[in-house]
Image (cartoon, rainbow, N blue to C red; front, side):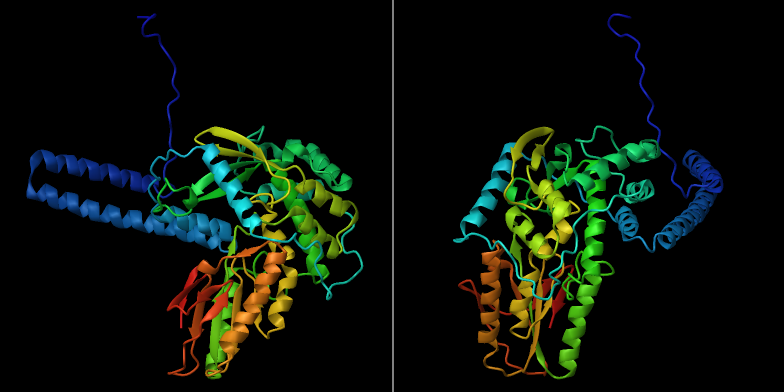
Length: 468
């Protein structure tokens, strides 16, 4: 027996009790189960009535306890959108896991690489090496990155989500033991800031493809979105520099005044409020409006590092601060992961570092700062938010030149995008006409890159579906 079936030790899995299950509810559930067993054994109507009464009371008490718990959670998390999102996600039904796929890591690596190369081959000229920012100060705005105190590093560590990456030498427990390692972490971060150099280990990412929507076909490789996982320490370093860059942009008024995404005190809500308010104001003045929602193909991935660095220099970022960004972008590597199999690859000329990196947020708006001049030249109102620039233009209801003028504006924007190696996607561009009177002419048809765009009944603006 010892040879064939030796004794082994197995840890018992324990699950923490639900927070709303108090001692009173435990006793009530015990009485309920006792009443249920008694009724099943006796099959008497009196026992059934007693069981149903206890079941009704227990359900009401359970609902009341759950309501109290979640009400307290919502009140304490009212100022933290991330916690609110997690609470609502836990209350909603999670989608079923996708069906297994035969796709491999090599398939995804090849698909993403070829997709980027295909887009870049459509550009006939080299990207613009510098960007004009005439409204910005010519004096350098950021020469050196400031060192940080240990308390600031600890605050950033505690504010980060307790996620982990397979590239981490220490898993999520780093947050737990961070006070003991804080002097060493601070030394590493300050060493990077003062030298303008990013360690090679911090420039590696693990890329995991996930389905864009649960209902999509898992065998179609185009239905996946690459999500990059970074080591915990690299995210801390990114956050430190991102805070200093954001402060610099704010103090020197380098933000686009109409930008809503990736900007302090701004969000999707402010962008949507700005759009709808202008549309309502135009309708109150009996003016028709045109809402155009542009889409960029793989915008984060076609940003060329050399052009991005030139843009940063034009904003006044120089010295060791500029050298830090150059080091951060140079020699980045990633591992494509599918079902535990990694395929290493390198990409040094294109791509913002990672899809979900801290830098994915400020880089694209900085890269496209000067495109607003093309819209302002046509007396349009630019609203750059996340990945969906919105163009809203009030015009007279029966203006016969509206189509030609808007198409000319879109042609200029397309030319700017092409010069900076950003590709507009006409197939996903949406056009919505909002009439100013009950019976305006709505035969507006626009031209974009040899494609005709006709008005639709609805348009998807960020997370909201709008109609006229």
